[in-house]
Image (cartoon, rainbow, N blue to C red; front, side, top):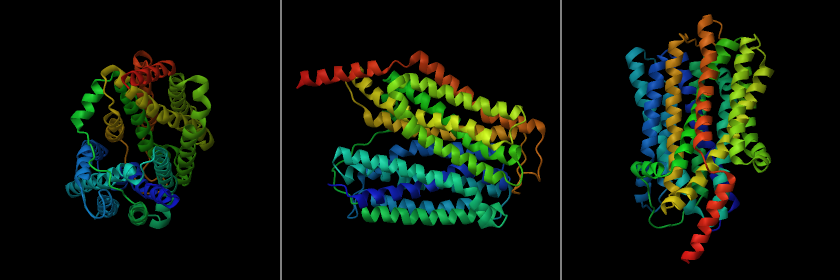
Length: 461
């Protein structure tokens, strides 16, 4: 099962398409339904949390369905194509809401968003699960995973950077119309990308697949204290990031303001996305050998907290309209997040070895399944907190593009600044405290565990 360049490229194209769809939903649903359509932010946040937690719980069951599938087209591709087509249709319906108000719009949003989550899971689980069926070479599998993750980041970055400007251009000044049209374009790209992926990436029969239940996931986690600390860190770090990504658009529209707020928001997110990638691909490789992973983790957490504190200080000093200063502060936050993303993955891997030495069982799949589960749960909780926070500070939605038609009160602007900075700092501080007190897998201990497992394997042999 040799992996070809065309297969690798097609797999990457599939990742670009699917993460464009995910990023559009994750980044702009709250803004679209609260700020443009006028639903309560708390209600929108509640629906988003329920849907994402349900989606997280649904992942193992989707895995079971995929594992039991047998067709002449393979095990994964039927789900990938059907899930893609359904999800593309639902995505368009999500951002092309009919002219409903009050209860009618609330019901429509609740049903459509939950359907979006279910149909996305239909294609996302088979997409990543088919890697072992494409090639049996470990190096090729690793390369395919790296290409998929990298291209997923590109798809997400395209949406973060270009959506608001495209909405303004396609909507002719009407954001509601613009979002509907951009959703149609993204949905079409999504379908084409997954058709290319399915056409070029060939499956091979790998026999019976093992699947994990939610119960197995939590049992494995509770047996492994170091995995629990890592998962808690992932929850808090991602929660902080999702809070930022949901609130920063409101900051630029109502605090930064002005007719050029969309361009400034786009510049900020572009710098942030670039710094996050640099954190993963450049800063981490340069520093982890010099500092060690545990020390670098503390440095990155401190760097992120400093970035948030500087953003708040810039605003209090009356410099919140200086986009250069905001980008410099944001660069610290996003670069640190890139480093933390790599480190939490490394720590999870180390916790698998630790668990094997402690219990005699190597529970790689269930431990890493928890990463996806917790990231989705963090996203749901963060967006719920965002919704409650926006209602508590009394932010009044406004569908105009200048952010000036509905002026927010001084207390609302102050509340927005505090929500966007203090809550993430609080979450990162808790992560820092638990990590310092409870995490014991230093680089030296990780090496000792690896040596012990290797020695035990040689003895058993």
